[in-house]
Length: 141
Figure (tube, rainbow, N blue to C red):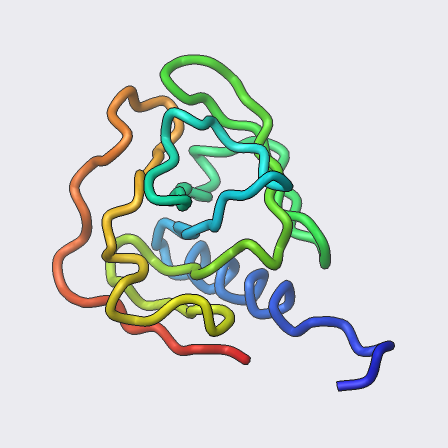
């Protein structure tokens, strides 16, 4: 990959998001939380957070080549979420588990079923029920 080539990750992220929404699924992302990530710290578990990106859960969703950002309510409080695209570890459909893993820092055995804090904006509990079955994710390098 030359220095001028952009990452494929934001393009796959947008495509999987659209696929989920077009098929009536709820898109969820697993995110690595670090100093460059703006998320509610109370919902972070083991350095990760799972976020519901469903159209009814977020406002002003922006998926550009560098950032995933949106507004959502957490425990009834509106917050702005900002995540560098490179910190998105996986995107998947909550209902079927179908989706995609990104990078080499994650393996299919641990994500997204590793039970990081799962946040559905507006809920007070950080870990609602997980979907049944194993997710079908592919590593994208």
